[in-house]
Length: 327
Image (cartoon, rainbow, N blue to C red; front, side):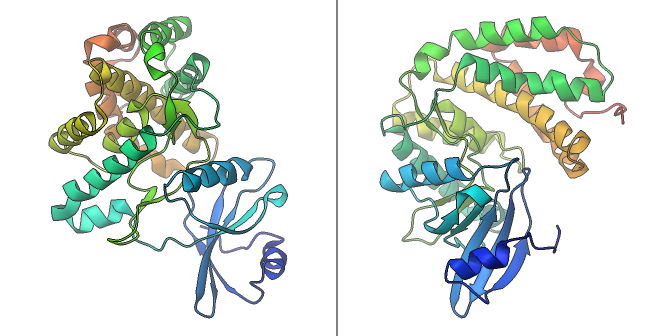
């Protein structure tokens, strides 16, 4: 984490009525965005810097407004200069779902139920003013596995067969995601803030929202890349969602499809973060994601993709992600 402040920060704060505020750099995420806690007397705010050309805060502002307008809890915007990548927003505090449930495991099921409740509220809404989660986008994401993970292990694989396997698996699901629900795409315990017993959960990192299948954010929450969710809790929360939302007979198969797609994508992204962006710490998360991918591949709906993995990725490079990385 760099303590060097970006150029233009003080000028933006001064123009927003926060001149002279103390600025505390915070740990970043897996993007080019940076975050700062801003203090001016008793006032607190968060500052996001999403610098162009790598980042554009406009989608964050647009999706956040839609969520707030529809009864969910995105941070309120205090000031912004989207062209320069600056957004000053409400400070949700420090109580993230991840750390809270790790510290208070007796509350884990109740906290997850509240997160499921927020999803059911979201999924009762009409689709948002967003693009559809298309076949081309699903496949583009899944290909991150063959584009980054496989070369990092020196694997020569059947790229065309991989694409065709995913198209076969996902084609059966696409009709069931129309007209679709708002999919936040990164709904997990590190992006959910606990604001207190009288407040809704605060949502973060939703700028890539699309309209898609309701199982996507559910699998994002219950097959978390960053914390262990027990099989018992995953099953209990899956059943709770199905009961609350009245999900149909194909929902479990679609959950497995999207779990496998998302986990394959994440493995690729974590390797890319190492190889391209110099962030090797994400490699330590890959074994958890692999284990989730393996479980998803056991569902009969994933048979073409499972067959591809069996033929192209040796067993010693699966699950535990062993073997030698190609630096």
